[in-house]
Structures are given as C-alpha cells and as structure tokens.
Amino acid sequence: MTGRLYLRVIALVGWRCWALAFLLGVLGAGAMAPLHGVFLLVPALSGLLWLVFSRFTARAAFGVGWWFGFGHFTAGLYWVANALLTYPDRFGWLAPFAVFGLAGVLALFPAGVTILTRMSARQCSGIGRVLVFAALWTTFEWVRSWAFTGFPWNLIGSVWTFSDPMIQFAALAGVYGLGLLTVIVAAMPALLAGGEDWTSRGSPARALTVTALVLVVVWAGGAGRLSGASVDRVPDVRLRLVQPNVDQKLKWDRQHRSSNFNDQLTMSVAPPSPGANMPTHVIWAETAATYFIAKDGNVRKALAGATPRGGLLMTGAPRTSTQSEAVYRVWNSFQVIDEEARIVGTYDKSHLVPFGEYMPFRRILNFAKITDGATDFSPGTGPRTLRLKGLPPVSPLICYEVIFPGEVVDSRDRPGWLLNLTNDGWYGVSSGPYQHFAAARLRAVEQGLPLVRVANTGISGVVDGYGRVVAKLGLAKKGVLDSALPSALGAPLYSRVGDWIVLLLVLLVAGTGFLMESARRGS
Image (cartoon, rainbow, N blue to C red; front, side, top):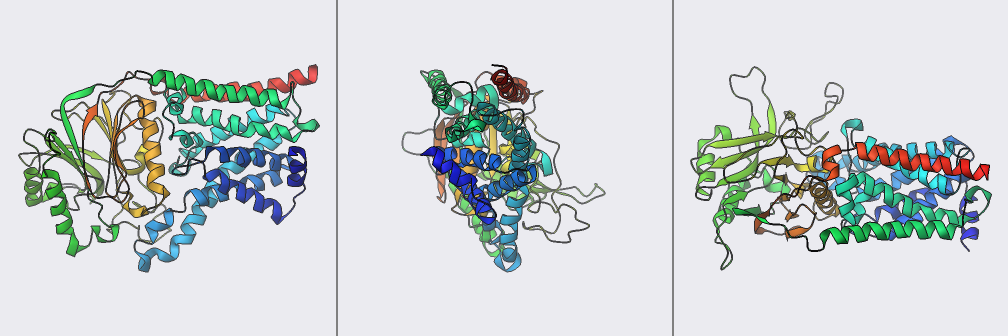
C-alpha cells in the first residue's frame, strides 16, 4: 500500500507537485504550538523526501523545498498579519505582503535543504538519505538563527514542549539537537516506499524500530531526570507579574494612556490571595510604562508608590538619549525603580525587530515602522547580567530576544534567572503567543535557569530550570500572578559548550549517512 502511494506521489508533475509540497508544509506547521500535532511531521517530512527524490534535477528539488517552506511558514506565521491590522488604515494593505513575503524568504531555507539533499543522491540512499536530510535541516535551522538578522521561530525541536520529559534533551544538545532527532524519526518512514533507491542494509521495519526506540530512550532519560527533581525557591522573594491585557490599539492612545498606567499601578498594590505573602518585587511587561520615565519625575514617583517596601518595580519603557548626547536616540528598555523613585537598573533591547522597531535600508525604503514614533529604536549592547537588590543576578530579555538559542545570557557572567518582558498584544488571540512561550521554555532548559515571562496580553508565567511551568496566566486575561522564584540549576552541557555540540552531532549524523552507503556498496 505504501509503495502504491509513493508511486502516485512521484508521478505528480507541474502545479500538482508544487501544491502537494505546499500542503505538506502546512501539515508540518500543525506540529507547532498550540496544536502540537507531532505525528503530522511523519507524512510532512517523509512526503517531502519522496518529492525531492522524484525530481530529476537539483533545480526541481529546490522548487519542492521552497513550496514546502512557503506552506509551512505561511501556516505557522499567519499571525504576523495581526500586527499590521492593529492600525488597518495605515498598514492593513501590507498584511498579505508581510505574511507571504516573510514566508517566501524563510522558504529559502528548506529549499537549501532539499537541493543539497538531492545532490547527495549519488552518495547515499535509504537510511543515508534520511540522515543527510536531517543533518542539513538542522544546519539550515541554525543558519536561520542569524541570517537576515536571524529569525529562529518555530524550530522543529519546539514541537515537544507539550512533554516535559522530551524537552530535557535540550539541556544536552539544545533545541537544534532535539530537532535533529525529531527530523530523523519523522522522515525515516520514507523508507517504506521500497524500491532500489530506498533500500538499505536491513529492512525498513528495523530502521523504524531503532529510531522509535531512540525516541523512547530520550523520553525515558527525560522522565528519569525529572523523577524526584525538586527545585528550591529563592528565599525572601515573591514576584508579582502584572498582565493588564491592554488592547494594542489603545496602548499609546493619549486618551487611554493615563488610565492604562493607573490601572497597572492599582494591580501592583492589590492585596495577595488569602494566606499568601505580599510581593517583594513587581514586574510589568514590555513598554508597559508608555512614558520616558527617566525624564518624568511624576511618573517615577507614581511607580515608586507601587513599589513594595524594600523591593523593586521592574518595567519595560522607552528610553531616550540625554541632552548632552549629540545624536537623539530611542531605546526599547527595561528599567528598575526603587521605592525612592530612583532608576537602579537599565537594559536596552539589542536584537531589534526589522520593520517593527527599525526600518532596514532606511535610505531606500522610506516607510514608517509599524510601532509608534518616527524614530527608529537603537540597539543595546547585547545580553547583560544585572544585579538588583534582593534578587539573584538576572538576564533581561525583551520580546523575541528569548527565541535565540545560546544568546540569552552573558557567558562571562552567568545569571541566576532569565526575565522576558514582551508585548504579544500585537498578535491578538492567535498561535503566535503560544509559540513564543514554547520557545521561552526551551531557553530555560538549555540554560538550567528559571525563566519569568511577563506579557501585556499573555501568556505570562514562571518556568523552572527544567522547563516546567510553575505558574501561568493565560492569553487575553487580565490579572496578576504572584509566584516564588525557583532557584537555578547547575549549568547543563548546552549552556557550557553552546552550538559546538550541535555541530558535532550534525557531522556525526551526516557522516554516518555517507558511510552507510559506502558499506552497502561494498557488501
């Protein structure tokens, strides 16, 4: 039966072939949050491999990969349109161009995978093809993390965030290593096509059994790591996460600005649940304070009034250069206020969103960025560890800075926790915030550090160093979340060696794929 299906797939030509590739990409996107249909990766990636090797030229294989990627990223990133529809009169017409344009650019990465996989046809077959394909997929995901300023959203390994045991593998090899394993397992059923090109030493059933057992071993290892794994709480720390659920259309509106601000002040000082301790530190979301607080003493006094006695209030806010600086600049910042209305800590976002926070090629593309203000934001200096009163050292991360594996801490000054402030209100009730939260959880596992996430409209939460959700406030809900701060774990392997372990695994897998073919031909 599988053989007949394979013959029907490879018989497709022209638009039918491209349409199937597109649909397989859409199918694969269903494995991402919030659906987590991991099983959908099997027909998606196995079918993609069948299409790749049904084409007689590398150029045709490139087209198959591009159409797959176009479907995959269109379905996975549709929510980007919501940001442009926030101000439909100004940017609504750009929504389809943004979704399809972004998907079209990102589709170049799967296309790179498929063209190189097809070019390897003479050197490997059967299992070797699958291993080379998986190694190339992981390599191109890594390239996607820095090419064109980088956008490692919806990496394949993130499909497992519904399972605490499975994501423990990220402590060893990061999300890339987990993705490498996932692609191998999901693409191995391609061997069921049969025929000379897909034969390997041993039966396809044996290969499928071995890969399934590897998956079981990874799950069992993660379950064993979590078995009895308790995490201490940082003493004398009680965090309050403020999630005001402010409509993005009203956030910067002059008529609502003051009421939004005062509402968050009221939420900050609300009494805790009966029997619970009072918060020691209050945290607001990205740009929750829509004022230049360093230049506005009245705003600082208001924030100080909501600061717990002896504690701190932390908030996202825009920051501008001082009068003594020759060039006027604006930063998307994290700022910390004490009860004396002093700013005692500052971090500036370093990884800015193209078109959202600055316009690339400003001299050529004379368009306004979609966020408020005519001036582009300036980048900060990169990951930084802040030392704040009453807290372990912290690495602040603003918005999508948390999606970049290996770039969330200053490796020379390891923090005790990660703090992610974001404003996912741009994306409404969509899959975007769920995908963002999934990526954040993986950073906690990779670094062995607790992560606190505060979002304007959700999802806010506290995650321990194993990636387990300790407390959470759901999407599109208004409220406060009071929680203890979990203690840090010891530094896992991935946090110590970074992507070198991924490079080693990729070379090992690809090398095994080519060596298996040499052994097959020599037998």
